Length: 303
Image 1: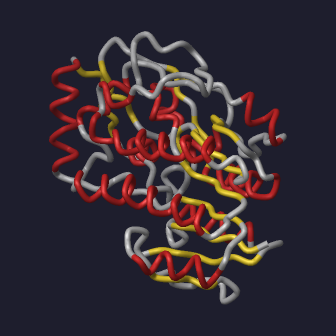
Image 2: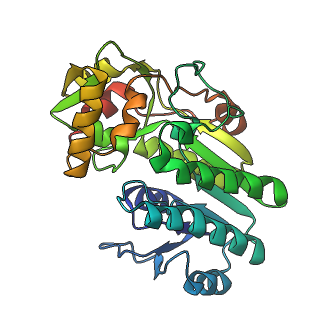
């Protein structure tokens, strides 16, 4: 099977590509180079928003597409929205046009939002409420909604939308990995929400399993059990700094503007309220079970 991966040169894209390469033909698409790329993988330097992407799909004719090319840590909100929403819309149109039969789209559990009324272990039919308090990543919820619409409009395409818990890894660019890598992590005084994580290697395995099993639906993806935020900080080798909420928001906002924090001040609600998800549907549909020990993954965040 020929599989095209968007965002192939990124950390997760490389992990997925190497796993797929064991049994399939892999084609990458990215605006960035991939130094040291396995010679068996063809990499096309193309922008999802440009006609060159249409040319790539027409020429390669992949049976499956894995969409990982979203921007998560870009200051320019207009650019991020253009890539995440405009680029995803263009890719979905091209998948329908060129007869792609399997599609995996990476979203995030963050789309549910961190709200005081959140139930523990939210199922996939929970509303996407992140825009209510964290407008900087509303484009991620829009990306998810676009993919969900594609899922129902094109039943002939086995489409899976994955909403993983916070991703951990030695070189992972995820927001939570960046937060846990801080020597001192600001927290909101009086709050210690339960947190969930998944190792980047396990997420790569989950994506490959979706491709190979033609999974169809919207799925939460989890790693090990949930644990309190302060425990996660301690296990990762950092130190929590509880602050009154106004001071915590001001400090994180300043750190973000200076490039020392991985998210803006609106992300502070994720340090107050739980955003835990129920991963049973994905386990039942695919048989996926995380292999990496949660404590070891947390300890390895600093490399």
